Image 1 (cartoon, rainbow, N blue to C red):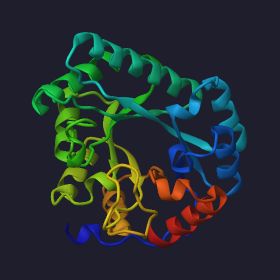
Image 2: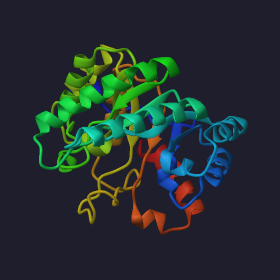
Image 3: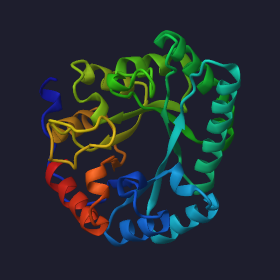
Length: 282
């Protein structure tokens, strides 16, 4: 990175802090909404598991009544599959995700794009493009954006065949639609020596839709559920925030932490730690 990605000015308030409901997984969504708002958190990203057995429109109204901003719905995607029946099922599920996003008032669905073991990454990437194209009319009708989230290459076999910002940019350019952009998650992209170039490539086309933060622990005990609280690991978070903001990003900073360790702790204490770490380390 160049001097344009120097550390950002320290954060002074929580006005751009968003928390994903998966971060405080032990809380039902109603409790998460109440606790986030009481703590001064500004935004919430709703994970679809939190909507199980709930009316999405009612949840959206509850969020609005607290003053929280619904930032996005997570997640859609998982388009690739070995059979056409499975691919059709994924497309239908993404249509449902778009409907749920509209119901809760979320302007964005985050896509974890998927991969299918036993078929090439190139085939999976083609199926991802086909899947997104198939649901774009639904996204247009609902006014909901779709954010491709490149995942770390360790997930290439099963969770996503899109693993770098360059691949995400290429997918966006192939689809060439204003509702398709990118969610930049520091956990997945912090290592990429082309990150600055690719962030600016996305920004030049108004495709920087979301920015997710946590930390990478070294050593890590689990490749999925051992993410760190900001400041616990090796990611230079202020530098990455400066990178996206210098490229023009003005959205929320979304805390997304998968952690068996933190989930096992008192979640009220964890929420206080999130707010403190956000101000100190982001």
